[in-house]
Image 1: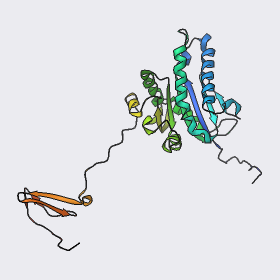
Image 2 (image 1 turned 30 degrees about the vertical axis):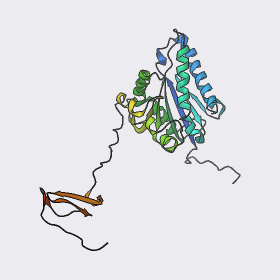
Image 3 (image 1 turned 135 degrees about the vertical axis):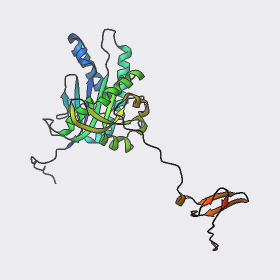
Image 4 (image 1 turned 60 degrees about the vertical axis):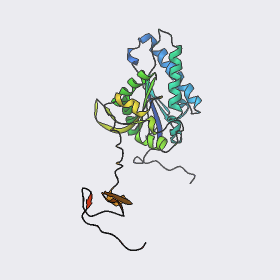
Length: 271
């Protein structure tokens, strides 16, 4: 099939991988320094993308959307796992290096980010995928995770949509990051009461449990399965008495009281 399909209004748009970034406290930077701070972030992101062998979104059709204090970057879906690993770790490392070299007069650069994938029309960027990406970024969970980043010396907090986590992390496509580096949470936005989605929170350098105390919307920890064997699962049932120890192969159905055995059901068949 060489000829392209004719697009109909009800056709589902092609999927895109999305990364949204936002500068913390950008509005508090003096106006005269806003452009320089934003330029520094753009340079950091561009350099890290090149390190990860990812394309510059500005070179892709409809691949870049400026949000003033941040941006939404769009990539082909096959690159999704690389947007988690190595991108997130290297982005945080670059922000750490920037902080070590920052002039005292310059602002601290901390970022929130989100990673999502979904259908999106171009070039107008219409679709729920871009809305959900922005709401994951603005969620209380991501904002609270940035406090964990501050306390640990990191400069990045990230929310992954559940579909990104499943396709990239759970599927084993992120060599440096495993499930223990993420915390299951619920993304909620204070001024979007209808929005509530599961997500995975990540702060580079921290495990998920280390981030949990900072989040009010963290999912409860998984309960460990009971190790108590059920009677039907036991291969042998030892019963102690004053005269010795008996072992019954299979389930013991008859009552035992104290150290005496009231009734015995013994299978005398040869096995």
